[in-house]
Structure formats: structure tokens, C-alpha cells
Amino acid sequence: RRVGLIGPATEEEAQLQERVELNELMKMALQRVAFLPFGYLIDQWRWSVFDGTFPPSKYNSGWWDLRMKYQGIKPPVPRSENDFDPGAKYHVAANVPYIRYFIAHVA
Image (tube, rainbow, N blue to C red; front, top):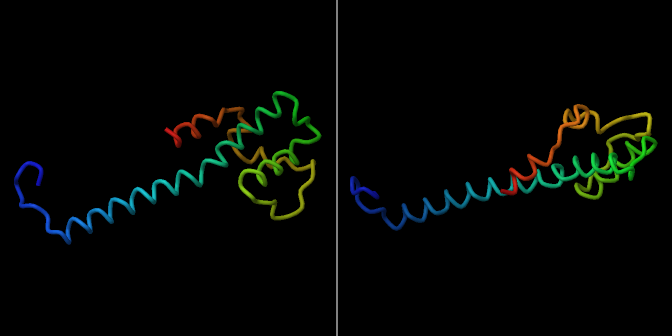
């Protein structure tokens, strides 16, 4: 249409295309919005470990406090400091910053 190979869209086609584009944009937004709290809390936990806010005796409880604060979720079963749930995320165990993913979703 832009180069003149086909005629202009009908009103119905234009409305359909607008709905398709809007739905695709909404889908992208919802995927990104759902990621943001988790992306933020991973490095929030790491930084709290580095600055001493979460000493080793509070690693797991600090993790779940942040999960509740930013995502509104609780552990599915009772957890203690003998568990190390943050370590289930590769980026925590390998000491890889997660902020890059957070920024990629914001940008």
C-alpha cells in the first residue's frame, strides 16, 4: 500500500489492523511488566548480601522477604535458613549481575 502496489485498505481492514497492532503491543507490555519485579529483586538481594544487609544467617529469609515485597508470593512450603532458594537462580550462584535483563526490559 505504501508503494502503491495495492489499493487503500477498507475501513473494516484498517480497524482490524489497528486491533491486531494494539493486541500485539499489549502482549509485549504484559510480558515485560510481569518480569520487572523479579528482575529487580534478584540484584536487590545480591546487593543486600554484598553490603551486609543480609548476613549469611538471613540469606533465605531475605530472599523470601523480597519475593513477598516485590512479587507478592510466599514459599510453597515452609523454608528455613538451611535452604538456599536464591541459589536456584543461575545468576545468583554464578555471581552474574541480573540488572542487564531489567534494563533491557525497561529500554
